[in-house]
Length: 335
Image (cartoon, rainbow, N blue to C red; front, side, top):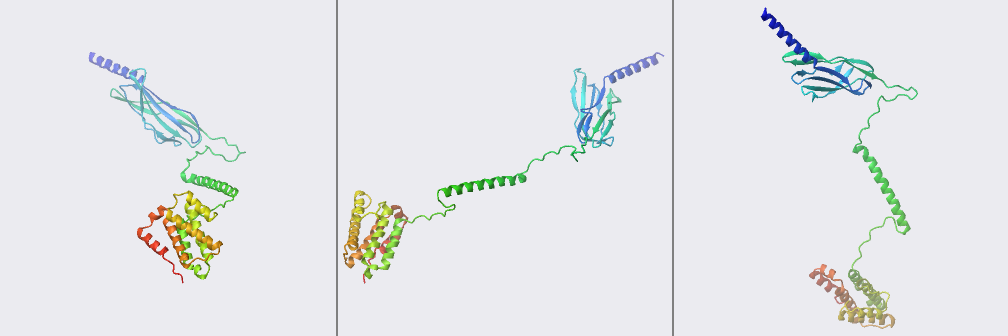
């Protein structure tokens, strides 16, 4: 009799302890908003407060609730300690939505708990989700349920606008450039100028022409000396910067005398003799000897070759210089 009494007392104590433990466990379901529009998303929270020594298993929420509420995503279980050091809170969140209007009841969900080896279940409360449609204004015609999101721009979409801006900028630049050129009386498109030939190249080519035509042998002595001195004057003006084409013979000679470093005494003497002889032929009707005609052409070749710019001399090889000099200063036979 005493043994049965002890067993009854022990069983009653365990039952009372389990009941007290269970009273400290609380499961709750909640929505962050009970009212949504069709297609909007809302959070469903399942949470449970329980002692730390109680093991809890969260309910398995399906992908569709009541066939009209869809579960889009679910988070992991987050655990927090409460002010009471013996208690803790665990929360799991679900993102849900619905595309049909109406009021939908989300049923309670059962949490499985393990209290000192005793398996039990505890339910959460149920919640209601109200899904509304947009009010339609028939006077405005069809409208979107929700404004569409703007997609980010891609390079392919932006490229035509960039090219358009560049083209417009180019057209504006061309118009301003054209106006400026016209104001300055310049052509819109100018051909690039050919680089000017060195003075000695032009002079030697002209002396070769005079040599090949041999007009002095045709009795045109005045024409011969005019062409010869004109060639030398043009060379002097381009090579030394002396305005020989506009100056008289005396003025040209005086310019070289003042600027002593331009040519040496030998070149100065030969040039003076050639220019003065040409003046006698052109203005005093002097008839030079045939040897004078030939010597004047040779002296002209010498003067050009010996006074051309140094950089041109260095560009030519010694053999080429020698061959050119031999060809240019060969004596012209008078027939």
